[in-house]
Length: 178
Length: 178
Image (cartoon, rainbow over the protein chains, first blue to last red):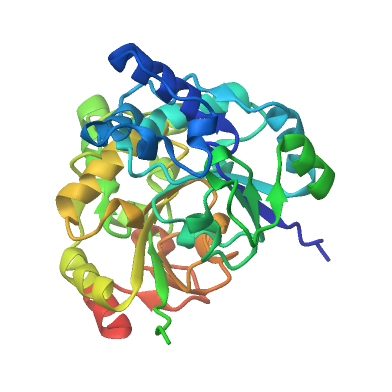
């Protein structure tokens, strides 16, 4: 009898990939101001820009190339390589809001996580379509309706959130899940 | 207390969209021969082309633009418009094998199913990531591991398959699901 292998959905943006550093850089390029990490505690980047720039972050995120060369969080590659031996790993990104990002995200994964295959990539809209056993995500709106066990990946914007088991970083994820 | 609304994952290719007619047209354009619908009974298009052309169908499917203007099956729009009032509808396509198709598929849905939103689109690899209540798909490899209730959407290639509840076409889907 085949052993059941548990499945795990791992988010991209702000969980394994860092779009915030790039968005801050582009914002500095365009407006000559930036934000500290303290400004972002409990907030999303779109919350801290002035009201007249409220659409600008969305515009960045839907610019072809934006997601193509983002930084990867420390230890994410090494820990996910090991998770991939123990779980059925899926990379699940709510990317559909930004259709220009789809191919970039695919190729970014190909570059940074070459041990994953196309079968393990899921670019969706609402994550309630996902039915894995575990989910790692920085957004409570994805974890809250999830029927499996969720882990909140700690980011500045969710520091005040309570009621979720946290993964502080990928080293912590390795300790808890491997 | 909020009523639970059942969710349904609807496949794209050969369920709502017709890539076969276009692939046959391109094959005729390139090689001057084509296939009858009878040739395709119990077979995929890639099974009926000569061995030396075995990669050609895959190449067509990963050509930018291929999926952008496919035909829609009769009654699919009308029935899915109604399903969308009764269920949480997701369009789920195992598109990740063809990264050049991703944006085309998004825009095709936008054109043909304008009443759906980006939140309802899921472009994935292996459909075992999906956890909806129902799934409509022409491929048994997607339905077989699915934990909800699956419906096999009848196509030439699956005519000999047994053991699945079938939807013969979208009118039939409307009768069974609405």
